[in-house]
Image (tube, rainbow, N blue to C red; front, side):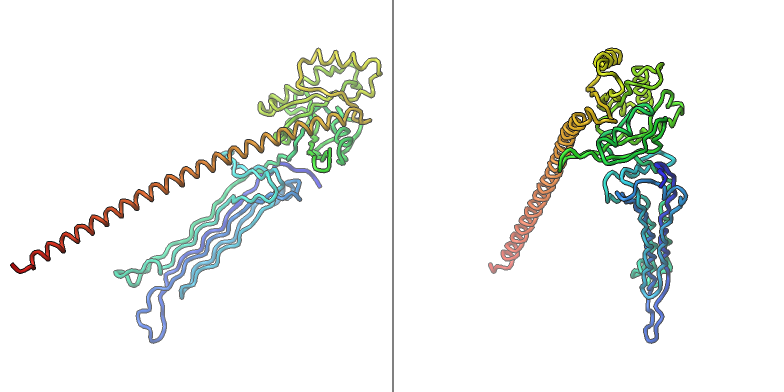
Length: 398
């Protein structure tokens, strides 16, 4: 199946049915009165995240989706049937935005998450709603409202914990094959990876993380060189970026330091927030460097490259150094998940405190209002007693 991570679709919710103006006409029942029913509500359009879908190819060619219109009302107080809703299923990680304004409508970041993206129109009112003591035969009715219509832009951002960066042929696909069960294509020419690949790395029975391999970047990607920046969106949800550097390039004129810095510059041009994510270096293909030269070449690279948060020395092909790297990533992600969960619990606690304060203030206001009502009743009771006493005084014989 081809991989598509962008699409544009139009969704149209159903219009509401019209209300009707009819009157009861039955033998032996004079002046039966109005009995026109309401129109049915138009169908709505919902978006649902489905983990069993991994591409937007279903929306590549079918681009218009329309929900059912509500039925018109009928006589004898018959209400029109509501239109059927439609549900569109998207891959987990799909971001839905308004095409014209860019306003985000939904972020389907959890499996099963359901969002209303176009609301159906409300049905019109029949004339039974307009009868009154002064208008016994109303002929007024209302038309159904139009359903919402949106032109939407769909953008898939895959959900992964770790994102791989690097030049073509830096060994990213080989690395993901070495640490997970994913089997992306590997060959000795550039751009063998044409679409993102995901691999699940399991470090224990209950500990794992997802790693994303995207097509390689080259210098000038911001101007469209190579595959450009189009796949960097798939790294925006990651917690850490792993930058693979080929320390033994086939081209003798290649400079690993300059190439590695070029990748970082392309990252900054694309998105400052992505650039500021934690970024680790993995110095790859050490098996191609003579053992007596490795330490010197690694030291020379780190000195020329500058300070890095963390670096690892690996050979993805042979698996050397991959296990310590994987466990370091797992420990980092465990800490990140604990921090995110703590922040979530803190937000929930703050929200619960805010709601509790609102409830307390409301209860206090209701109690004050009830006390004021009781005081008013007591005053009225005292006035009534005083009036009765005055009346008794007036009727007492003298």
